[in-house]
Amino acid sequence: MATGTGKTITGLAAAAHLAKTLNHKLAVVIVCPYQHLVDQWVEDIQLFNMKPIIGHSASRQKKWKERFKLL
Image (cartoon, rainbow, N blue to C red):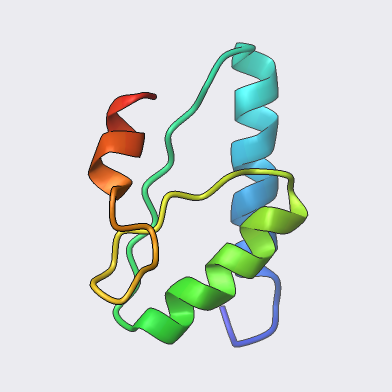
């Protein structure tokens, strides 16, 4: 799919629907080749009232491994 066609929103909508259908916590791993793409995902994730755990080297969430274990 081309840039701007809604891939991110479609993926997040599917994840939100699955989490609601299963009625429990859901962990989704999103892998991006560049940190600026991670930042773009984070912005969209927050629109769905989800709390992302960001694990790249420049992330301010230095304890992301501990947060992930709590899931």
